[in-house]
Amino acid sequence: MTVDALSLQVFANLFASVAESMGVTLRRASFSPNIKMRRDYSCAVFDSEGRLLAQAAHIPVHLGAMPLAMDEVRRRYDLDPGDVVIMNDPYAGGTHLPDISLVSAAFDSSGRRIGYVMSRAHHADIGGAAPGSMTPTTSLYAEGIVIPPVRLYRGGSLNVEVMDLLLRNVRTPTERQGDFAAQAAAQRAGESALADLAARYGAATLAEHGHALQEYAARHMRGLIGQIPPGEYRAEDVLDGDGITPGPVPIRVTIRRRPDASALEIDFSGSSRHCAGPVNASRAVTYAATLYVLRALQQDDVPVNAGTLGPLCITLPPDSVINAGPPAAVAAGNVETSQRIVDVVFAALAAALPDRIPAASQGTMNNLSFGGLDRAGRPYAYYETSGGGQGARPGADGMSAVHDHMSNTLNTPVEALESSYPLRVARYEIRRRTGGSGASRGGDGLRRDIMFLGPADVSLLTERRDFPPPGLAGGSPGARGENVLIRDGVETILPGKTRLDVISGDIVSVRTPGGGGHGSLPGGSGGC
Image (cartoon, rainbow, N blue to C red; front, top):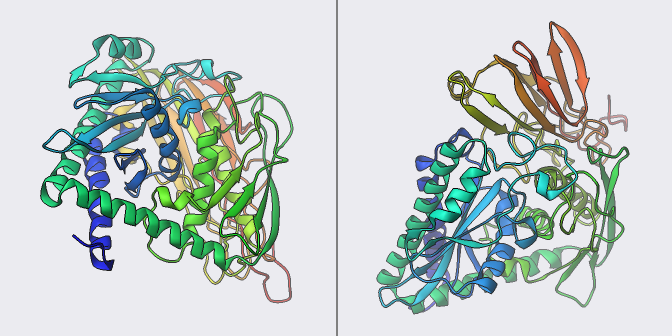
């Protein structure tokens, strides 16, 4: 088959459908509300050389980090049929410990390897100091069990010893075992779908179109780079803090577009050194956030694959908050620092592409995790993120109460929460007028109050509680978020990153930031 525009589009959709089918299987088979309801998972397809080929429209921070994980798996293993590798090590292509990846290879009818498939899902608990494995700590080892790439299945048979080790180190082994089985089913679905494509079109045709798609993505990324005027663009933003030591954590970027270069240089030199607390991001997370921004600026519906990263030259200073090394804690790096990386890269490009850059969105995932004993006296652990205000865009208001940028999950329905855990959702509403004003208004945040019906261990990892999401081009900043403990009707403001014990009747209120406004109001003022 000759590659032409029509066949290229057909195969782009065929490869993406493999990843989508994996996601459907994972969601339907999973046990935990975090995967089944919030859809906190991602799936992707790689070619026979381990290069990203296609992905489903899942979680950007998962998907952008997957290629580094695939490199690590292929470096260690030559996978045979039925082999499945499990891993979560942030320093081997992972993001943070609750995000667990499964990797396996697909083969055609002759036994020839034709590609790889990967699923990554956020598990509601993976051990560590606190339920949910998302709490202020100073070491990776306090965040949960670290899983280097190891075979969970060999030749189709479960490695019972590895599974026993994993389940012995988590608070909710039955739920974890169910979610692991769901991921394994997703792997089989992906392998089967890729093998069916090979049987229908031939392995050579798959490889030919896979390579052409990667070249196509690279051409489009070079096209975007060509739209950026030559020059040097700088920006700086900060994290509120690391949850352990006081003071903001700066992240800086310099973007260089040289007149004679087709590559874009993105240099994070000058960013903070790695922190004591868990806001450190692995190299994979920073790559994912940077790639997301540039993909978002592409105006055409271009597939994301290995070719997308080719024209980018990303410089990360070692032992920094955006390129940490072990044993630095990373739980919030994946969910909070990734958002700030997005903010600072967008801000740097605002001078180059002013008609296409939005104001800052809420800039946080508002991570809430907790656990205790359920109504039957069994341990439980739960994790969720909350939406907030989207940044206003040139000529368009931001949306309210949505997950944005590196997060792409749903909210957990109230009914599912209350039927699964000893709690009540006492209040759930939009925080009106929390978006920044301007010619275009930022979206509003939301408020979600959870009343506990028994004692629980609660952790919060949130941002934009001290420094609000900035507006752009004269627009006002969005409102800051708040975390509040309500006990006997008395409100106590909680830190942005904290761990606390609650008692029956306590309410933890998560009030998320609004998005920044864009453009000056008449009279030249951004307003209040």
